[in-house]
Every structure is written in C-alpha cells, then in structure tokens.
Length: 431
View 1 (spheres, helix red, strand yellow):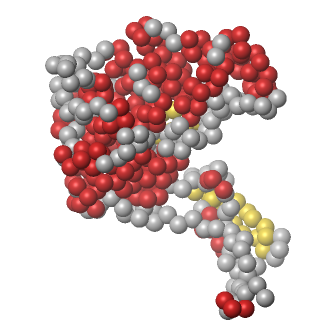
View 2: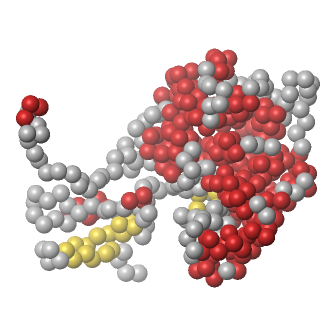
View 3: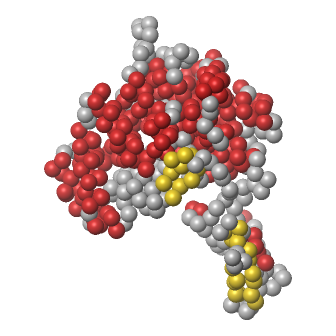
C-alpha cells in the first residue's frame, strides 16, 4: 500500500512539502509550515460555512448523502424507526449500544424521575408576554436551568455529566409543553409518570383541567415517537456545531443546549417545515401545481422541503415520515395538503429539471403536515425538533469532552480591513 501522503509544491518559492493524510484528510495545521519567509504566518485553510472541513471525529452518526444513508451508531435509521422507541434510541446514541430490557427499564425510570421542574421555573415562564414564541421561551428557560443546578458546571465529573443529561432529557418536553400552553393561556399540566415519554408530552400539551385522565391515541403517540427518532442526531449540523462550540469553552450543558436551541430556531435550520406548509397553502389546489412548478423553474419561486446540504439522494427520513403520515391520517382524517405534497414529490422525482439538481424530498417536506395533523400550530414545530435533537446534542457534547484533541473553538479569519492608521483628534476630524 502506498504511503498516505500528499506532495505540495509552493509555486511562490518552488519548495516541496510532504503532508501526511489523517483518515483521508489533511490536518490544516500541517499547512502552516508552508511559508514564503520566516515572518510569514503560513498557509491556512479558507472554508466559509465549513463546506469541506471536519472539525472533529465522531462515532455517533454516519451519513452518506450520495446514497441516502443515515445510521446511528451503525444502525440504519429505517430499522430504528421501525423497531425502537425514542428512549431506546436515546440510550443507544448516548452509550453506543442498544439497551437490554433491564437497562432500558432503568433508563426510562431515571429519565421519568426528572420530568418535574422546580415551581420557580413555572413562575419564570409566567413572566413571558402572552404571545412569546415557544422557541424563545424554551431557549431562555433552558439557560435559566443552569442557575437551578449550579453543580452542572462540574463538567469534568462523569457522574455530574450523566445527571445533567438525565435532567435535560426529562425536563425538555415539560418545558416545551409549558411554553406551548403559556401561548394558549392554559394552566400547566404536571407530568404523568404512568405514561410513556411521548404520551406524557402529549398529556402535558393537551390535557384539559376538567379531564380526570388523558388517554393519548397510541397511533399518534407512536408517530410522534418516530419523529423524535428521525430528528435525534444528524452529524455536525448548525445547532450541533453550536452545542460543540459553546461546550468547548467548558460551559455547562444547559447553557450549551440553549445555544443549540438558538441555532435551531433559524428558518434555514429547524424552521424549514413551517415554510413547507406556507408553500402548500399558497398552492392551495391540485390544479395550481403546474403553474407553481413553472414559476419554480423560472426562478420566481422556491420548492420548499426539497434538497439538502448533505443528501444528494432521497433523504431516508422523508421516506419514513411519508409512511407515518398515512398512518396518522387514518386516525385524524386525510389532510388535503398531503395530496398536493405527494403530487409535488411525483413531479420532482420524474422531472429532469429537479433530477439534474438532485432536489429530493428532505425530512421537512412531510413532517410539518404530520405535526399539523397531530394538532400542533406552526410556532411549536421547531420546539418538537428540539425535543428529538436534544439527545444528539448531549451525546455530541459528551463526546467532545472526552476528545483529547479538542480545544476551545477558535476559527481563524482572513482580515480584510484597514492596515494600521493613526487616530485623528476629535476636533480635527472632517476638516
């Protein structure tokens, strides 16, 4: 086998450098030796938006975008969504292996134990304006939890880290449900430990004070569980990068999670499924689809929910969500938006314009339709995304802390401002 190196010739100096490959990559610090003279800083990599830069090594999620493959810890997403619960997958993502029956029982019990929040957290949330966005409430309340659990700053203590992870997994759905009910002017509902993870979330969302018991529909609860599984982790996306970047400063996990929530809130990340619903509403009827497609091709519109930074094939999560949507609509009644969505998909998969550009449906294309069918308003769609992604953030944060190569995140820049200049006294400026 040939030696895994690259030979680089600097045409400025005619010098040649041999750079070793590390797992098929160049360590960009090895480029620093390439200099014009001793005073030269050395060559850096320039990669806006990290389009071709690996910032870490990770054993959590594998994606092959060209082949449409997504695996958690080696397990295909299709198998996990078919056979596992969200908390099974959460255990897998955190620990590297699927749990045994006894391990899962203990893990579920531990997470469930931490679903309650301090009464002062409720008072804190009451301070938000009646029309505060649920994502803003979730992000702020998550950051505030750091003040309730100051021991979370002991990030070097494995036992403390595990406790905070359990707290975050347990409390995220509770806080999310409270944020939603706050926006509707409804009283908060305490967790019910007799229900499953998603059933309990649904109870806290929709149980009315006059109801002695809330009985979630098992089909809808399972659909929500599958959606959480599909969103559990997705490699080094924007919000995960934020979690790792803030975590690299040794901030506590509550502050790091709040930062990740802030990144997820952006319409280019977690808010995309809401934009799909807006698009479907604008189309309105099946007969309007040809004109809409014509506008997209002419550059007058955008096909939301198609295409992905990573996937250049059919997003495997979209296939699962499409199947789940059919199951949901058997309970809730068919949403006419689904027919429009399926026709758009049919056109995109057969039209050379979209095939050439590799615009396949992504996870956002059908998820918003399901969320709406389940009874959610669009302003909580991204909150639901955050609940599922929470375990991925925590696993990535935990992995970061155990990686000896990681330091505080500090990207370089290419300075484009003024060279040195002198300050003109105030009374002489402009003269």
